[in-house]
Image 1 (cartoon, one colour):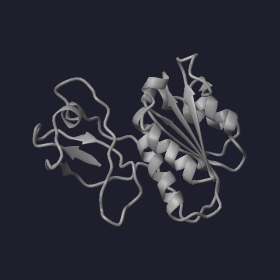
Image 2 (image 1 turned 30 degrees about the horizontal axis):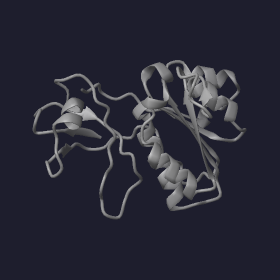
Image 3 (image 1 turned 30 degrees about the vertical axis):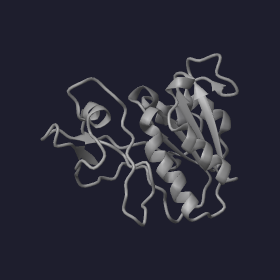
Image 4 (image 1 turned 135 degrees about the vertical axis):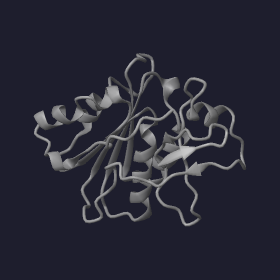
Length: 199
């Protein structure tokens, strides 16, 4: 959904909710600090609790669960791509149906990994959930796996899984052809839809 702060009127940033729908109507958004002058910078460094934010109409990103499917899931996240995939985990947790979920969380180094407390809580609470940290540039981060998130995820792939990917463009570029070349059916590959660029 597009988000705007009155601190930078007329400028919008596309953000994905990090939670499944909640009874109280609250929405959790994950925002990465970026250069000054952007909506993201203001959200991270200037906006305070109680301030108004404007939310535009949501759009379909292509990252939603098929309610008719109970296939196991392989979720591959990089950076703040973790947010929309966390909402899928919460959706499964709200109505367990026997499916297993493997979530590979990629980051360059251990210090780049965020939301680790939430990840640990989810894994400790649900025996159907496996979380695999993957670090592309941190040979000292043990016991995490080394390599880019998609390569690590393919080591955990099982036939029949639905695969959801979300992360920076460098992670997503070429992901679909790579998965198709491995024989994974196109209908089981879910990447975010293109959306307008925002700051």
